[in-house]
Length: 354
Ligand SMILES: Nc1ncnc2c1ncn2[C@@H]1O[C@H](COP(=O)(O)OP(=O)(O)OP(=O)(O)O)[C@@H](O)[C@H]1O
Ligand SMILES: [Mg+2]
Image (cartoon, rainbow, N blue to C red):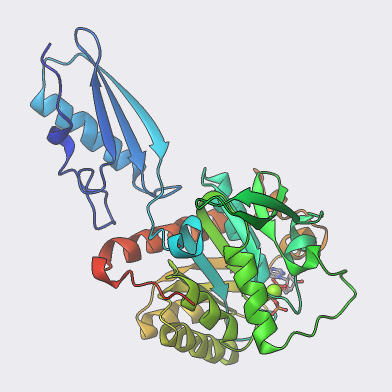
């Protein structure tokens, strides 16, 4: 049998993404024995919502171009796309995503942790960085402990460098000041120290190869965002807000702050949706600001209790009432990061070295 060419599939689009199978080289084709063809498709986003549609297009196209093929085997895998922008600071992460807000206590750490867990659940390799050095939440929320170890590595030029190894917990790499300084001890950092600590967390840490590094941002000023954006070009920021009007005004300020430091805003998440704070405010504000809305997370006792009791992963278990919402926010965030990346003009991947 004549081999089937992968070119036959290259113009098939990934619905809702500005790319085709050919443009991101997402497929290989193997012609096995008489009448059998094996297609391997790599999806660019975890939990890609139009997976079925792509599989149908593949089968239809094969039938069109090669009606002689009797059997088709389709293998699916995940090959996340992203700006891979940390190269100059030694980071091999495809997408660095900051989770921030305009004010404290709206659920940044809850959303950052559940976003990291949900992306991992959908098959991605994920790290979680706690950039809140004054009030670290990640060790407690994830129920992880341990000390990041300093190990010596051989540099490409033959010299020996020291790298910090993050804490690993249930397959996720984690870094937080909370692993280094005891929980009760308040940490007072001055601006330059804060900058140094974050640089160490990002570029002095052996994150390995990751699809996503989620950064739990501290409340308040733009210092941390500025430091991050000077190190690399982030995939983008997720802005968390609660549905009430006052909280939304703060979120709008946060959007402005990210835009000012050149971090694209991937969208807004409404957290604590329900009877107490209301519903729909964030979707409306996102539309007014012309930024994507990434979904809403209900206010539930389960979310608070799982955070308090260090069992956030239980929120993704079958039967958990928050599960659908959290997976939806994670998929939508990944979709927006992919869209941003694919629509970026290539020459703007400027990286500032400090
Ligand atoms: N959807 C939700 N339903 C119920 N409780 C929630 C929800 N989201 C967050 N919480 C609870 O609200 C509190 C604050 O959440 P969290 O620590 O994530 O906020 P934060 O924005 O990171 O705060 P900070 O500004 O102090 O860093 C926590 O007790 C958390 O468990
Ligand atoms: Mg927090």
